[in-house]
Image (cartoon, rainbow, N blue to C red):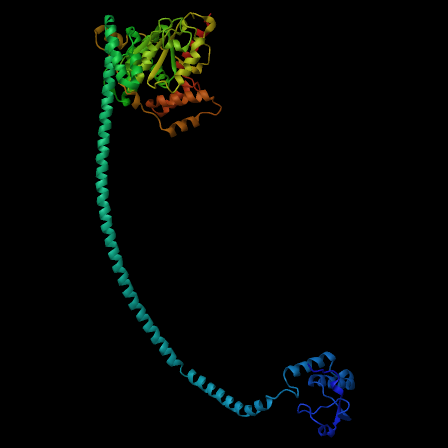
Length: 530
């Protein structure tokens, strides 16, 4: 790299011609500094063009003073000229460029003028352009219409073909659905026929069992051994029903065995009229029989006076169960609820157990049992447990339990004195004068009796029960709500309004003369127990 320092004062020297007089070394002349070169002749400024211009401008600045360029401007000017290659050392391309531009510029101006002439000429062709655009638009619209028509025809054809295929598939599926529907209806009809046949067979079988039990209960005492053999064979054949059949078939007094009557079941639409007619025939108030029915079918214990209870139960049995009911006579040996199933001492099956078993064997019939003489037992020992048995889900719903209570408790210190809501007490009174039943018996006319299907009793929908319970005032105890709900369901056969009123009365939320009289009678009995 050349040393460019102090080139602004570069000395020039003369050349000593004697250099060419000497000998060559490797075909070259050798100049020895300080010897071969001559004396100094002059001083030249040989620095770079940029440095030279910078020095000149700075020198002029010293001359002009404040009007001259600043150092920064001087530096910028020098750098701009140097970058543009305008220094004497550069600009070699400027002379040829200037020479060519002398011919280039006129030609360029000529071409630009021709472009202006062309633009002007084209501007005059606007009408032609508009006609072309209009023609192109018309052809485009015509072509679009042709294409649209062609596409629509093609799509419509494809849709018609697809629709035809779909219609064919739909018809095929419709035929298959019709075949399946027909098969389903046939299968449904077959199942329904089998169900009806099965129900008929079950009903006939149940009726036969009932008739057989009735004949077994009415058989003479000397046939006990043979009957026991028959019962044992039937029990082994009946499977799950065998245990209930064995209990129901056990021998006992006629009044302590359930009655199985082969009577035609009446429609529940006739029940209210049948119940009212039976009350009038026996001479009882209609409300007494209605409250007793609603309470008994609601699963409650209906308590009656001893002197008139059996007669009232017979009236109720004529209206609901074809006149059949069993009497379970109580005595002081009953000290726990298990004694209602087996008689203490003899371990014989009780009337209550027979009726319970009969209710399980024949669920379509109502079976009524009368617990006769609560005052002859220490009720405080077993009656609370008996209430729980009545509320148990294993108790047959077609088992109706009524009881009687008389004067003089056998054990005054162990008399039940629980809440009145645990049972329903009634004191039905026979009307004065001669009743139709008395006249019929005196004339030997058979009294009409009715049976109703326990499985077909009308019941309210769940929403009806919820609405009824919602209408009861808040603050009612859970036990009262349970009693009201069960009574509302049982009394539904009398209509929604009457069912609501009867349910409130049986739950002690409202008062009715029949229940008020029964409550006073029960309170008097318990008060006079000593």
